[in-house]
Length: 225
Image (tube, rainbow, N blue to C red):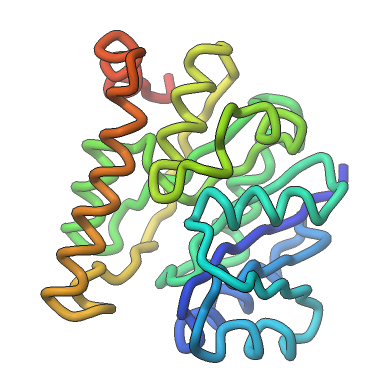
């Protein structure tokens, strides 16, 4: 089964290379696609000149859900693995551990959960694992998720809620030693706080769109058994 890694990226020129190095060395990944989501720095150029990587430059920012959807439409690989562009501590083994359960047909989707990277991100993902941006999924299932291209920062919640509704087989995969910078660290306190509030608003909009509270409750208690 062919596997494409899709990395949505917005202004990540300095952090992207270390992620690409890890993904490129993963044994189960056949193709790497970086979708620069209207970046105004050198993200697209970094990806375009990275050996073994394809790159797309979106003319305007579509949000994370839009970038992921564009990436999925630019590959015919049956299996996709989505990864954030700012990960710290990612290894090829982490990537393969996300892919393998879906590759072997033991799961329809996996979600990577940070463990042992840093306290703040470990706690956030322990409380809300369904918002993880690290996941492998069958391409046909991803493209079935309603309105995924419009979900922006709520895209992970939208996917996981649909997975619950459709009774997908979901496995959580611990990503030991992996973390990422906080928005306030990347953007500064003011801009980072604004970006965080927008992210929370996107997630809340999806959780409270008329299907809550039952769907929200099921998401919060969804765990790999």
